Image 1 (cartoon, rainbow, N blue to C red):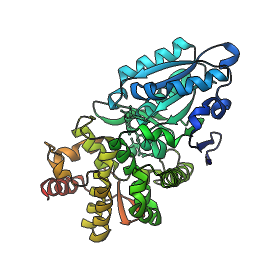
Image 2 (cartoon, rainbow, N blue to C red):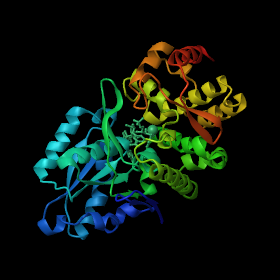
Image 3 (spheres, rainbow, N blue to C red):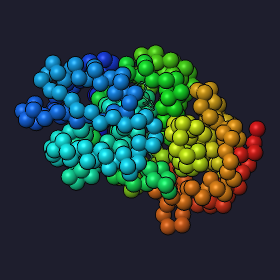
Image 4 (cartoon, rainbow, N blue to C red):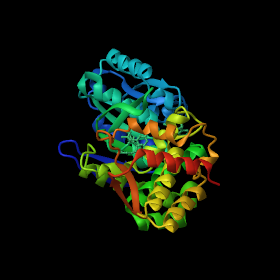
Length: 374
Ligand SMILES: NC(=O)c1ccc[n+]([C@@H]2O[C@H](COP(=O)([O-])OP(=O)(O)OC[C@H]3O[C@@H](n4cnc5c(N)ncnc54)[C@H](O)[C@@H]3O)[C@@H](O)[C@H]2O)c1
Ligand SMILES: O=C(O)C(=O)C[C@@H](O)[C@H](O)[C@H](O)COP(=O)(O)O
Ligand SMILES: [Zn+2]
């Protein structure tokens, strides 16, 4: 078992990584179940149809042995659940259940369930507790930790949200056994991100061992999850609300990625992790174009992404958009400072930085080249 603390003044919590932990869910979650048994109220769980079908029985078995029962709010799988209508239904459900500020709501699912539940908990009664039980690789290495919660709007990705930290994160890598391979690869994009943004040694390890991670080989998988969470916990502890530029490093590839997601309608056509993968290649190549990064390192990053079966060439995505149209999506980026969009670029493999001198017209021209390439 690994326990990784996220150190935040007054809001510290642990990320527990343990294979098989879900079988003893009530034991691991005991500290966050207070209140439910005494009053007889059901423990509120949010899941999507897949995670409910696959794992609600396991959770309920463990809860029932400990004298608790669960009540479920189940959403349709996919990005569309991060929306106003679903948020409204979820917050009404929480209020009908009589959830109090000292209660915890449990999010059993991927980043979609986690982001939606976290935001609902941030605004219900001005903030009630929640616990993340991430079931995708992406959620286990990234979205369950750090307290970014949000829904999407017509204007773009995660534009309505709040920082609201979970009280605990419980990761059972065994649940990745049922995760479709495409989702596994999408989560792996965020794993590569940690190597590219700040850990050249980890990036090299992934070049050598990435196939084992994707094959869910237990040792390689646990190492990839723990290394990713340690990096995220350190960055979040340093800059919880993305004010100093440190946390912005976690956005490597995301300004391009969110534009690609918007262009493909936040749909199964391009998953978040796939968009981030393509976005990191664009960030690397744009860095090389400015002579910040060597061309050979930019292509090394692209190769690692392509080798994992992730999209590395936007020219193959059948986008019906110009560079200008893609760049226009970026004007909604939450990092915008007035008319300037600080951009995450690379100086080396393992060294990302925030550039404040990027011209969106130049990004549009670069994207036009990339849309035509290959
Ligand atoms: N808050 C953050 O810091 C943060 C970080 C990264 C990504 N995100 C957000 O996370 C979202 C993407 O999350 P995701 O990639 O986990 O996608 P997701 O939540 O849509 O899950 C992907 C698919 O896998 C299924 N699934 C989940 N667990 C499963 C399992 N164990 N077995 C079988 N199927 C399973 C789901 O039902 C869904 O169909 C995006 O909205 C993204 O913006 C947030
Ligand atoms: O935790 C962070 O900070 C991140 O940026 C992690 C990203 O992987 C994640 O996709 C996040 O939701 C993007 O944040 P946003 O602020 O660009 O919406
Ligand atoms: Zn992301």
